[in-house]
Amino acid sequence: MTLFAELIRDVRDQTTPLSVSLRKAKDLAHRLKSQAFIDWVNTERMGYIDITAVPDYRWVRLEPMVDVLNELFPGHPEMGDTFRLEEDKLGCHRSIFERFPLVARVEELEGFAGSPMSFEPNPAVMEAVRESSIRQWGRVAHRIHRVWGMVPGLVVLRVMAAVHDRLFNFLLKVRDEYPDLAESEKAFEQVRAMKIEGLVRTMIFNQNCTIEGGQGVGDKIINVGAGATVHGNVTVADAITNSFNAVPPSTPDPVKDLLSQLANILKQAIVALAEGEQKDAAEEFESLAKEASRSEPRLDRLRTYGVGLKNLFAKAAGSQAATWVTGKVDELLSMFNS
Image 1 (cartoon, rainbow, N blue to C red):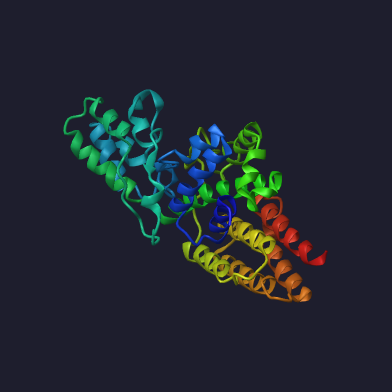
Image 2 (cartoon, rainbow, N blue to C red):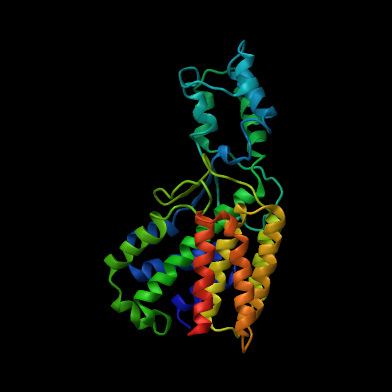
């Protein structure tokens, strides 16, 4: 098995940690001679989370933030009470909370169980605090730590999913352009570096983050936060992952590829559904995956499960989530109709 084929298998099946796949991707990047891909996989901290990604952070979970603001603006309790902060009053202080990202290594995020985590803040944040002439800045820094500890598990999981999806979709596109890479190491000699550069910029750097209301990808990083709608059920996402992981190894690769893509889309698209419907979607996907991976899939049942999944997103018709799910289900069904 070639390095390229091995990496596609690992990323598709998610049998190895993402950090391990990224290390393999570094080797592949050098074989492909793409500087843009080399730069991306060498980015130590490619997942960035803004504090604004905390659900309802402005109004609900603000006790530590209020303490910080009262410290920053003594004599102006209304600022801490309402968080209606004006740019001219905030100056550099607003950047402490919104403009400096929270950073974390991919390795630090793996094995995350779904409860809030604490992270080390960006050093630039601490520098901003030091330079702000605030007395007892250490107390402020401690409170900032407390605020960052509120970052929910779903935000972290979606950063991981966004990194994974970009890598997987890029690899699939490379395979479409150079199918021989999966068969022979000599095929690397046929690869045009400029072609790979274009695919990196299209499939990795220029994709919108697959989170409703989220940010696009910047220079080598994925930025989640600010306008992101961050809610959903981590347990449902886990159920979808488990259903895909249960697909037998003997399942044909094209079917596995589509099921993997559909699973990753669903884990992010379920935010468009009510909680009960999210669980229904996970169950429909489980049935669809089981049927599609049978040695002789039954077309009537495939259509039933596929239509059931699409109908759940019918209420969100016109949304990006509905478009993603419908398109991928139709693609899977057409594979068996041909």
